[in-house]
Length: 102
Image (cartoon, rainbow, N blue to C red; front, side, top):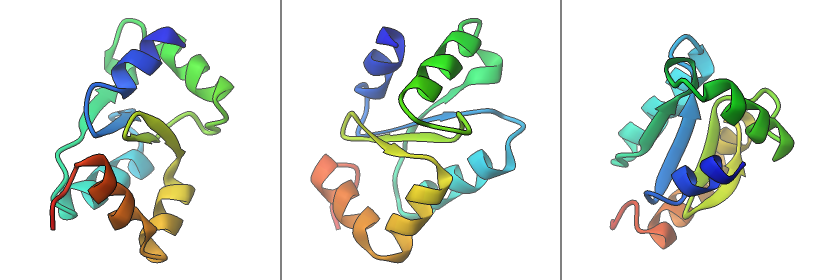
């Protein structure tokens, strides 16, 4: 849990992902298209990935990926992020976190 918290606060937007997950891919694309350069941690390519996956599930992220943090705070998984994007809240959150300027 401590490792997830440290990694989540490294950058304005942090995504915990799996390289084989199509929803993770879609969420990463969404952020790239917004002009955001997120820190991405591929759990299936990290030796401590399983441990981080359990920590994310304890935070309430089920399924465990993609898990998105903005401004060091857990936002949610794909469903939550897409809802925020569609209702216009995501862009505001990204501006407040310093991930985008316009």
